[in-house]
Amino acid sequence: MTVVVTAVFSPKPGKKQELAEAMQRGIAAVHEEKGCELYAIHDAEDGTITMLEKWTTVEDLDIHGAGSAVETLNADIGELIEKPTLVTRMTPIAAGTEAQGLL
Image (cartoon, one colour):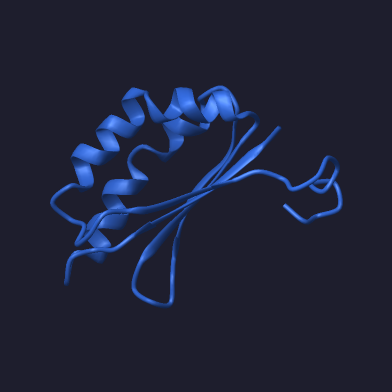
């Protein structure tokens, strides 16, 4: 079953561009990880940066979460964020909902 993740990053004042650049450094490498279907950052209207992820399985996501890419990301952005990142993991409510465009 696929899993979608949103992660909302709150940059310190004046650090948004630097945060975005730090986050972009690892995106290409993550796209090469098993199960990664989407890994992208977006500029949100409220001044945060939102990362959208889609993984083929929860297991693939868990491996990613324990891997070096996340460790490097956390080290690169630690001094640039104002508060803890809000991470939400979501899975389809019912079988087949992805094909219908619900997730």
